[in-house]
Length: 459
Image 1 (cartoon, rainbow, N blue to C red):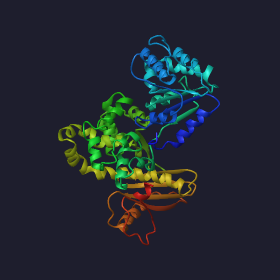
Image 2 (cartoon, rainbow, N blue to C red):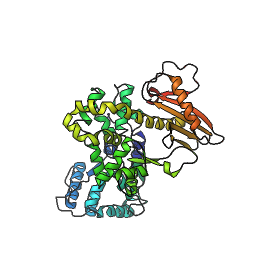
Image 3 (cartoon, rainbow, N blue to C red):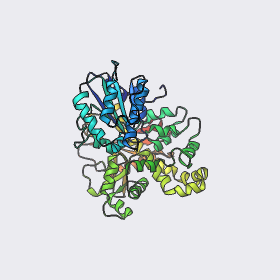
Image 4 (cartoon, one colour):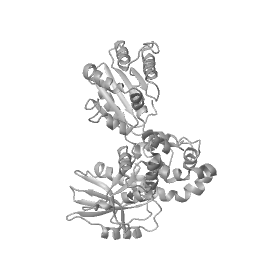
C-alpha cells in the first residue's frame, strides 16, 4: 500500500463517509485505467469488505461469485452454489450474518456488467437503501463503473438511484506534479513528454519503466504489438461505443488539429455528426472550444480531443497500425514517429500551458471571480496560443508557447506583439503578455514580459 500515489482528497471523503453516523452509498466513476479500483482497494485496506467485480456472464454465476467473495471476508461459506437465486436474498443473507460492530462495506466494481446481466440489481439496491440502509451505520455501499455515460445515467432523474447516493466521486486524471511521482529519475523534458502521451492516467504511467530511457519505453509499450498500450485506444473506444468507423473517423480528424463541425462532416462524408460528437463529449474524450473573445461567430466553434492518450493513439498509431506491424517497433519509431514527434509535442505543450495558467491564476496570483483560459483564433489568419481572461481584474493575458529552442527572445516578443495588435481587447481591459518556453532562455535582461519555463510549470 505504500506505493499508492495521490488521491488524498478522495480518500478523506471516503473515510469521512465510512465514519459517518448514517448510511453510505458512494458512486465512483471515471475513464478506464484512471485508478478507481486501486483507490477503492487502498481505502478498504484493513476494513471488512465484500469486494465483488461484475462481468459479462449469467446472473446466477454473478450471485454465486458475490457470495464466494463474502466467504473471503467472513472466513466461512455463506451459501452453496445455486442455493440463492436472487440479488435481494444474497445481499440480505450476507448482512444477516454480519455480527461485528464495524461497518461492512459492499463494493460493486464494474457495476455496469452486473446490472446488464441482472437488470433487477439496481432496483434491489434502491429498495434496500430506502427501507433498510439509509440510516444504517452498519453497512456501506460503493458502486464503481468505468463507463462514464452509464454513471451519469445511474444518477440521472430516470434512475432508481436518483438523489440517493451520499457521495459521488468522478475520478479525474492526475495533475503533472502528481504524475511525475511515477518517474522520479526522469528529467523535465521526458516527464513532460510522458505526460503529453499518458495524461494523468496512472496505469499508462506505470507502463513507462523508471529504469529505461524514454524512447525505449515508448517503443516497448506503444509500438510493439505485445506492448501493454499498443491496442489501448481501440479498447477504450469499444468499451464505450458501437459504430466504430464513425467514431474512429472523427477522432482521426481531430487528432491532427481542432476542427469545425462543417469540416468534420466533410471528412466523414455524412449529413450529421452531432450524435457522435455529443457522445464523445459526454464521456470526456473531446470538448467544444471557442475563441476567448467578447463576440464569437458560431462558425468559429471547434472540437478538439482532450484525452491525452487518445490524441496520441489516433495521431500516430491508428492510421499506421499496418505499417508499425510490418516495420517493427524500432524502425517504426525512426520512420513514422520521430519525424512528427516535435510537432505533436508542440501542440500538447500549448494545452499544457493553458491548463497550468488556469491553476496558476488561482493558486499563485490570487485571482477571484470568473477566470477563463483558452486560445484565440480568427479564421486561419490569426492564432494566439494562450488567452487568459480575469473578469474581476479587468485583465487579459495573451501568450506564446515555444516547445522548440528559442534562438531570439526579441523575435518571439515581436511575434507576440503583432498578435496582440490583432486581438479584440474589450473596453476597459488591460493586456498582459506571457511567454511559455520549453527551455530557459540564456538572456532575458530588461524584458518587460512574464516568462514561464517547463521547469517552473512541472513543479
